[in-house]
Image: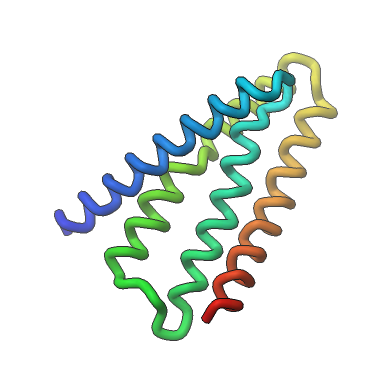
Length: 126
């Protein structure tokens, strides 16, 4: 159990760092009220977790430790549901209800598209 704890922690460290870099880079490149960094991170995280999970179907290509590192660890640290909810609420409080609905709807819809695409990509290489 302790070994798995540290594996998840290492993955979370890498995922959180990657989230920070992607979000800051997008904030610097694109100035807009839409929380693009969180949006891109969450959709990409769905694609990645779909890809990593599908690699493990039918016996899989990953050890249990690698799967834990990449899914629970990296993807868990990379994606940002609590930030997503907070930013959504902020858009609503600021009077941007349409932008809030667009953000929530597009995040959920493209999250599912990302999950499906990641699964499809992994199955294509198996």
